[in-house]
Image (cartoon, rainbow, N blue to C red):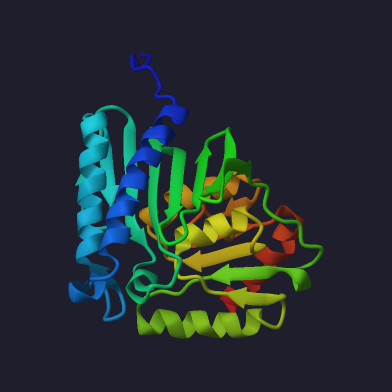
Length: 274
């Protein structure tokens, strides 16, 4: 039996997400000065959450569901409800909370719209810089900024070799995770151009889409970490995948320029077996 619903337009979902992300970013920016006054921890002493994270998620949830009351939602800070429309919003109110606490200019509002389980629209807005990354499935990925408001289409990079590949990564919150991940990075560093650690998975994926790094990988991301950013990377033409024929982020998330995808994936397989 066919579904009587009209499939939602990804462009309309994106427009709503952008409007809500801008309002949420204003709330985050206003809360930056007092961010350190109300900080809790989650999975470990270095896995932090602020009152601003929670307030931002509440705002995003309220705005999205006011516009589309039948949609579902999954948020990092606990927002969760089923969908009766086929649409679910996946929300990270502040991706890069430690950066936010330290006033490092790389923390973002990330909002993605899934339709029947597939991400169809996504926005990542760097609160500190105003850079806006957007994508719709099949519609390309774009970046705009306060000084360049006209969206520029993103096409990633094309490094000539693995040795010329600039790689971004991130680390887990638990000590044993970091020990293993640090050992991998130590071996990776001698095989590539260099390593960057930005502190926001959503922005790292967008940075790769923009060609500011050539590859990004990270283990054990949550859906809200990558839902919007992975769509931006894929729509920019990057290879977005997991390792060993496994899906993206199960458990490894990789976004890499096509010109070095083969050797980079082979190297990650080698390093994570050792």
